[in-house]
Image 1 (spheres, rainbow, N blue to C red):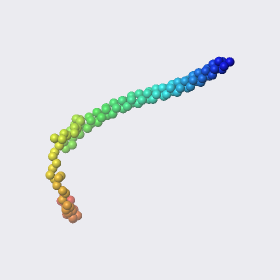
Image 2: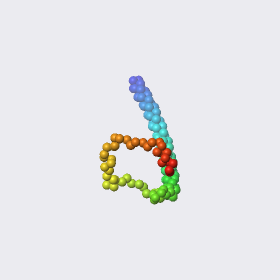
Image 3: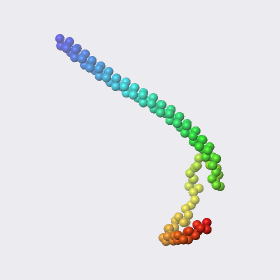
Image 4: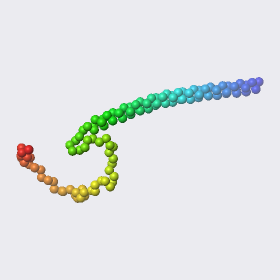
Length: 122
């Protein structure tokens, strides 16, 4: 009788273990299904981003084309070339005016009457 009781205990433990395994497998399946859903959503967002990037590229090309028609004064027409930062050797040397201190005396302001006369002759 002791062996039947022992067998019953072992079978109960096996059954409890199987139930826990089933619950664990269900949790894993749920997690995999959620990850699959997120992966599909990410793929959709990537496709949408690629489509928007293509649209922005086309809009930028059209804007560049439109801007190329403008000319400002003596300046050449708008250039589609990408501007580059000047190299250090191409930068002008600091002028001596930048290195000397500012004049401590402010320049006197023109009187209002003189200013009006200038505008009258203009």
